[in-house]
Image (cartoon, rainbow, N blue to C red; front, side):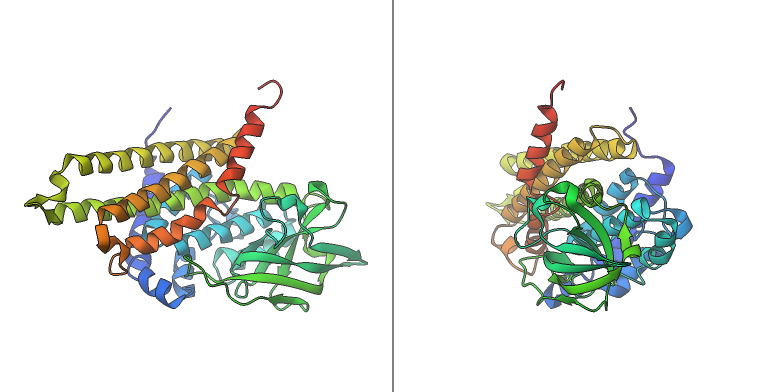
Length: 381
């Protein structure tokens, strides 16, 4: 059991940290205020290999591990959680094509995705199918060498801007086994989008409903076999949950640093806030909880890399703990700033708005508990 990073992992972490400090952190406030999708900076991240972290090298990916990805996303989120989270979603959608697509499909779509010449979206959630994802109603009907899709997806990151939409749609009976996965390209007739959502946070990435009205696509755009779509979607989410947990850790770590700097400088009752033992204890607890969440997340990433049979449970555990802990630490950092933490003059309120949604997406934290409990209570466990 080695808790240290390899020389290569240290280099990966340092590269991501420096990039986030130079490129994301100075611009995040502006992106948030203007709801700006930073395409230039995203492509700069892609040039470092961050758009295809665990994609095969033969199609332009970096061929790294899930643990490497966790290191990267924590560092990127310290600069801007919203933008880092979009990169996570892009990686998740791209990985589904890489892992389950044919060689022709991989070579058709992935070279442009790994450079972010094209952007990708993951389309599972529907207005009537959130936590109960297997109840989705978007339908794909086979018509000769094509499928015709009808339905709608909700809360889609990149909606209206992405070039590639990885869509889960029903091709068979009700339930998980009746779902298949498709790639739909922007500009396909019948593909349209709702208005951009007005959100609490995550303002540096577009979010909109994705609609299909007799949207006709070639059968060769199906990823994997008919009926495999739910399995593909869930396997994608294992990694997505680790990434979003890492984003929470990065955002929280940045806010912990901001709080440390603030209480050293701020004076009340004739001495720095850092001299008060109650606040020292609070800082100590924040750092301890973050480290505990990080260790579980890295263990889950290692299990996913090893294809361990309990990897999904550990990914759910890690996502729940990291996102809950991350939000709590950010909230405590805001409290330590007092009234100043509530002002946009300081970055804490933006981090609070951005990390809050991590407890909801990629499966709510309540659903994470369901996944863990089901695994623990399986016969023979």
